[in-house]
Image (cartoon, rainbow, N blue to C red; front, side):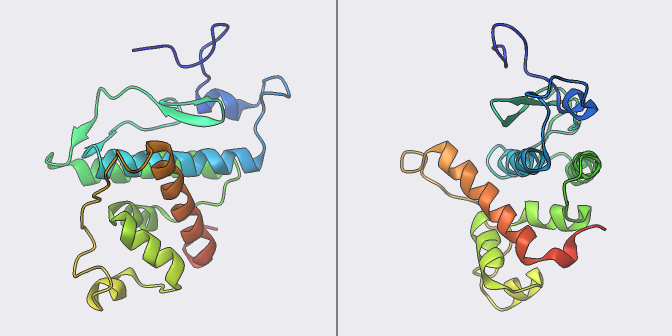
Length: 186
């Protein structure tokens, strides 16, 4: 375990940053909040698909901001995907995180749509975000995903740098949000 932050101060929780009573050089504008939201989505996606985990207690208090990136802490309530309540906990995490980011001014997809997108393989997400197809079930029924929307992600980490992988997930979620504004909560 190591300190997330600098030698002068630990990285602040997103909850602290949202209060806004910080020096002007530390305050976040809407673009930075949006970037942190997509970074958080990518973290949730990686936890679910690669680690086979759901955080279980994800909130603005367990998300730190350091060097314009989100760092997730406090995995004491994390469960693996064999846990009978993992879907309920994932939906709870989505709801808490999306509610927080909405309060910061970020335009966020509905909780149900985020839940659906977090369950798809990266190749399916990419296909959806680039195709203009608005119904994910249509992708599955027409065989665009080799008959399944839950295919596992198989990446050779010797070939792909983790950071490139994470940036790819962030870009895919950004593309989905841009292509499907009807899924946005008002």
